[in-house]
Image 1 (cartoon, rainbow, N blue to C red):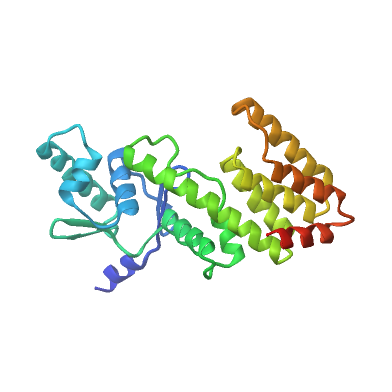
Image 2 (image 1 turned 30 degrees about the vertical axis):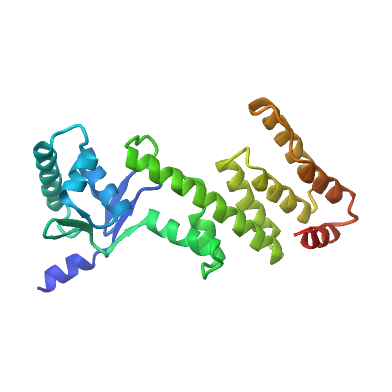
Length: 253
């Protein structure tokens, strides 16, 4: 019993942001692609019935072959690490003791958007620009990747606004920069990047952001930045100092 308890207590970390990685007690656990897909699917979807998992992971196989493939994957996962999965009847799930970076990121992003408790240090660490399982093209991965993409952009913008309001322009700059990296043609992200530069006194950089954005829009969409955005930059460039600019933007908001 004691040995089993110690084994279950070993930290298990599943990483889905960037390349797939499973570590148990700090050591890398090597799995086949079929087993990786099974763990990733359960991490994203939560508890699922066997037929649903089998049909989602092997959509081009008949039900019997898909279920056989699932059984083989389950056996290999258990052989590699017996304390990853729980099976309750026909329901499969990751054990709660498995830490999943995707779930941590989604939780933090949602807290930021809802102005709930998510400290700045944790938010900065989690709200970068790494992609969910790059190179994986399963429909269920692509759906989650798109959902995460939009959630992260929204959270980064909210974080940037919050840091500007708190006078942390350098942190706002980092968050706005990540938002622009994720969605280069999104005007709200570029405007926050400009505001952060203005708050730091980087007027030349703020003007450069507008120039670059105008060029990108013309090249990709054949349109111009909104008049409101152009006017905001003009206000910032004409302001006597960054405090005056922040005051005007606060009144405008």
